[in-house]
Structure formats: structure tokens, C-alpha cells
Amino acid sequence: MSKKLVAFFSAEGTTAKKAEILKEAAGADIYEIKPEIPYSQSDVNWRNPLSRCNKEWIKKAKINLSDKDANIGEYDIIFLAFPIWYYQAPLIIRSFLEEYDFSGKKIVLFATSGGSNFGKTAENLKKIVPNSEIIEGAMLNGITSAEELKDIVNKY
Image 1 (cartoon, one colour):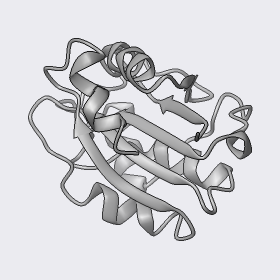
Image 2 (cartoon, rainbow, N blue to C red):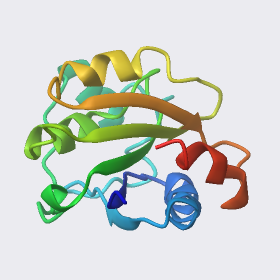
Image 3 (cartoon, rainbow, N blue to C red):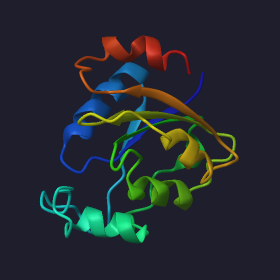
Image 4 (cartoon, one colour):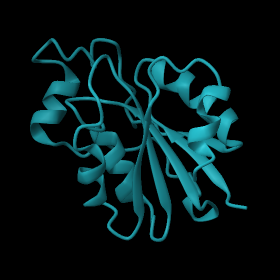
């Protein structure tokens, strides 16, 4: 049996709630990916061209992580959950993937969004961790219980 981890980033709490449901469905451990400098609500206001998230995106900034204690080596499958920003994973996900050795790991993507789908997220993340398998899992919008995710996570 594979050891599983739900690693997630949530700027406003939406993805955190869905990650808890995903954890329950997968029977996995959970780890929150946090930036060294937490995001405020105004930081993630993508409608404001001067907001932090817009400035970071334009610069393709490296987002520093608050810690590096995910113990990725202990896990075979990582369910990676995040909000879709700019039709892709947030830059902090790139930082997380660059921080650890994911060689031989299966990374299954889950996301929340106000209306976007995965787009080219899986394709773009594969470039960061070429020695792992990246799989597009599911959008978590509308998911309200672990039962709704069991069939999906049991594929892995």
C-alpha cells in the first residue's frame, strides 16, 4: 500500500477546506504549503494591477516557503491541491516542487477555481519535476464530501 500526502496551498481558505476533504477521502497525511510572507486578502486581489500576486506573476518571482519540513521522501503519492491563478498553479507551487526531490513520485493535481480549469497546468509542472509522474486529478469546486472523491483518489 502506498503512503499518501495531501500537500496544499490556500491563500484564502477555500482550498484548505477542500484539502481536508481530500485528506479524508485518500486516507492521507496533510501538509500546508505556506509562503514565508503570508498573503493578505489585498495581496491576492487579482483585479488590482498593483497587488502582490500580480507583481509576483509579472516578475515570475520565486516565492520563499515558510518551512521545508514536508518529508516528501516518506511518500509515494502526493495529492497536490491549490487554487488556479492566471490559468495555472500559483508560483508557490513551483517553489514547492523545486524544493524537494520528487523523483519516482506520483503527483496528482487537484485545484479550486472561480471559473478556470487546469489549462496547461500539468504540462507546465512536468517541466519542473521531469523525473516524477504528474497527473491531472480533478477540480474540487462543488465537492462537499470525502465520498465524492473516493473513486477519484482510489485510482491512484
